[in-house]
Amino acid sequence: MFLAALPLPFALLCVFALGLVLGGLVNWAVYSLAWNPRPISPWAPPPEQAEPRTWQDRIPLYGWVRLRREAELHGRGFWIRPIVIELAMAVGICVLYWWEVQQQGLVHTQLVWFFDSERLASLTHVPTWTTLCTFFSHTLLITLMAAATFIDIDEKIIPDEITVIGTLLGLVLAAAVPMALLPQIAPRAAAPPNSVELALPPGINRLPAASQLCLEATPWHGPNASRAVNHFVTSWRGLITGLACWAFWLVALTPRIWRGRRGFGRTIGIIAARVLRELCRKPLSLIGLTGMAVIMGVWWTGGDHWHGLLSALVGMIGGGAMVWATRIVGFFAMRREAMGFGDVTLMMMVGAFLGWQAGVVIFFVAPLAGLVAGIIQLIFFRENEIPYGPYLCLGTLVVIARWADIWNMKTMGLQELFGAGWFVPAALLVVMALMGVLLMLVRGIKTKMGFE
Image (cartoon, rainbow, N blue to C red; front, side):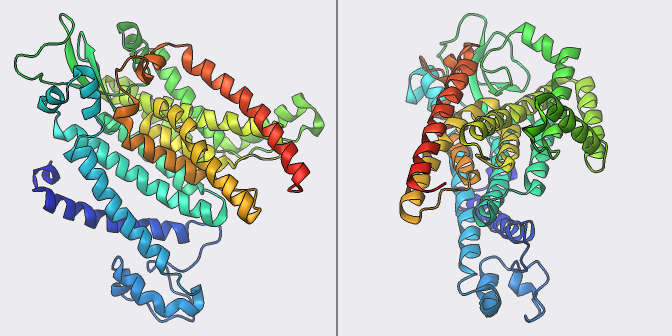
């Protein structure tokens, strides 16, 4: 709340400084967490041939200008991209603050659709603390995605140090501050968990009888809400659902190699034995047991924190499962690995922060940017492999920025379509089938063109 109490120029100055620090963290991660670490970050030990680094070398932006002296060791112009990253993070976080907190961009358009009036939407007070929660959550997610993006560009790999830690942070944040999840506006007979009642403009009442307008963290069962769903969440079945999501994520972190030469049943048995063996080893065993204990503890406590954690757990699996299914379909259609498993764990991280509903939209948005970039790369550089992680991150940014346009109560909007339980599974099955056919056609074209 301190940040929101400041005049906008001073608040943006503080946010700009935060962005510079986070940009420096991104640069450290890009060079230190890569598969082939490089001593380029000013926070890393310098190469033996380089001069000792001082505190001035660690000042954002300015420090990279000083490190130009190491150009002979790291390559000419090596310092330019880190400066751009730090400056882009600082400016980008300022824009995010202005949009989410100052303009209430994730909520305002939803209110416009609800009231069918820009004026009434502007008169509706939205508590600032709710927008600050989403702002800081998205700032953390963007920092993690920025590091993953540039490592993926450099090495076509996304390290677990980013996605695993990021997923855990997303789950903890959802449990501790449930309103950090993406918001939705809905009239409710009674305020659901993780919600605040919005005061309507004086003299205005466009709600059904005996109901109130709520700003709520989009739950895993959103946009639908009922007493039966709430009872399911708080019952032992809700606990089993949360633990199953956690177990699924742990299995996803284990190494698995499909060797179909030994037959389907034999291969499944070998993979299951290896997964079980890996789950019993540290650090996965420690992470798994600690997570189970925390999940059961939060469930026992109940209330808003359990609802937030369960939404994040379901979002984690929903986001990753779609990309995992795409990877499997791509493997059988292309007869080769279609995308790295880092893309799966990346979307699990994103789902933990944003929920499965946003994950579905990202799943459809990301390929559009990836398709354009892939065609350009194929035509001009004859390179048929592109890192997909950056486009998943780009799709995530689009969904975050335009959430209120994507998720609102307009007729035949996504809330209405997602409210029909059959729509999302049916749409995904159709898309998977069409994608498999398309990938087989692409494989045939690439073979004729001599790319394979």
